[in-house]
Image (cartoon, rainbow, N blue to C red; front, side, top):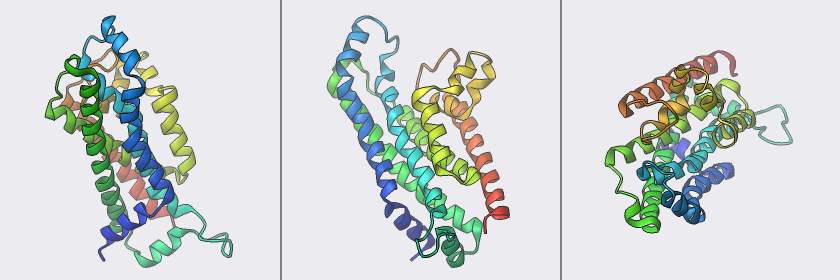
Length: 248
């Protein structure tokens, strides 16, 4: 069995990972139906200047699933292995089996990427199809490039959560910050009201890959993808460096 296969099995064998899978697969499509009435009224009242964003905006709640998966990929390694050894962690066993840390992190990241990419693709297609089914001709057919941008955003958010959890070594703190910033009060969005430079923060700039309207600033989709990818690459590099220096 390859290391990638082992990490895929480990990830999909986690109960908390299945919470992320269910949230990612079901939340956005369900929201399409729950919000159908209010959305129709908003369209009729002219509140949507670009109705092509409708299905894509709904994906915001589903991306929480990618965050959960990114966090538990790492946080599971820091859980105690059992009551008979309260000081031991799964990480100790993992490093004993695979002492090459760079290779281990690469396999974990690859496993996470595969799972999140499939989840993002299936959920995006399903959500956009249901949006068209519910709202008909009010919503134009999505361009393939926007669909690809949404899936890439999904993957990069999962990797962002993965990197941050490696950096902070605390899944609860990382997930709380990410969920609050995404669904309650977006600090990144508030910062864009203070300075236009904040539009290049990873969670804000990434949305420009598939949404036509994101706040008061415009960023080209390709530029948005490059900037968010650079953020994630930098955080992954920092996380890998810290992991190699401090985790025993």
